[in-house]
Structures are given as structure tokens and as C-alpha cells.
Length: 113
Length: 110
Image 1 (spheres, rainbow over the protein chains, first blue to last red):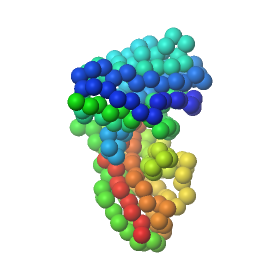
Image 2: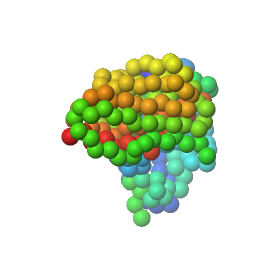
Image 3: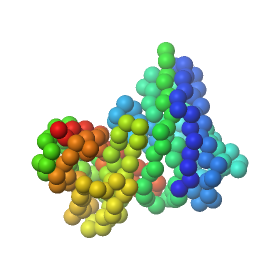
């Protein structure tokens, strides 16, 4: 699985958009980008994933560059409850696949009032 | 509601005393796995199972055993726990690329 690089920490004001970048310059054509978050020692929570098109769900939007070497997770209106560690993971498969998730150190997002 | 349930949530035990951490899921997923999380090392996979009676080692399997006799349950067994197994443990299932994690079990071995 391709390696990812994320900033160790970011701050965001409550109510503003949080834009979390991820670099995955060695991504292969069949690898998807996944985002998870972990709130204070709880189990990681799936947010969103995509292959090459931008994706949006009720939690967030995922913007993947055309060359697929980087992506940005967008939390459109961050709240204090969004304070968490955010992990960007690149791995093969999406559909009915399964398998190990390799977690890096992630980005600690702190949302402040 | 989709759930992955681990028990116990907290456990303090002594070196060498066998213990089992249970994991149960209600999503009928074939794939289940165990992770441990340690400061500075992140989440690392211990064992995984692709279906009933099919298990395999992850990245850090030493000192652990698992079994998968039925689809919903995937217990983690520490036959002779040691202090270096003090950690936060997570059970997870996965399907369609999405993983679901339990609440975690904080284990302390003294």
C-alpha cells in the first residue's frame, strides 16, 4: 500500500471549514484513498473514501487531485466534536474488498471556539 | 444498529494469567481483525480472519492467539500475558472497503 504524508497537527475555528491535506505521491492506479478519524481513544471511525472522483457524504467531502498524488478532506462546518486524529490511508480495493488498514500518525485536528 | 462489541472495556491482570478479550459483530461481515494501539506506534494489526475457520497473522502476532468458530465472534487470547502487552486493543470488521471498530479494551499487565 502507498505511503501517506499528513501534517502532524492543525487548528480550525468552530464553524469554519477544516481542510486536511494528505500527500500520497506513490499511489497506484488501483489504490483508493480512505479517511478515518479517532476521537480520544475511541475506535477509529470511517469518514469517506474515493478513487479519483471527488466524493461527498453527510460527514465530509474528499477532493482528489487529477494526478491522484494528493487529496484533501473537507469538514465544511467544523464543530468542537470534530476534534480528533484524522488518518489518511491508501490501499487497494473499494467495492467488496477487505483487508488491513495501515494507520500512520495522522493529523491532530483541534477545533477551538 | 451496526455494532462491534468488545469485552471487557478495561482489564488489569498479572503476568502469566491467561485472558480472553471477546469481540462480537452484528453485521454478518466475513472479515474481522484485531489491532493494538500504543503511543508513538499507532495502530498495528495483530491477527485477522477472512471467514470462519480462516485466520492469519498480522504485523504483531507474537504472544496472541485467535479463533473464528462462528462468523460473529472473534476472540483474542493471551495465553501468558506480559507487561509489553499492555496496550489499547481494538476489534474491527470490514466490508466494501469500510471498517467498523469496537470501543476498545484497555489492558494493563502488571
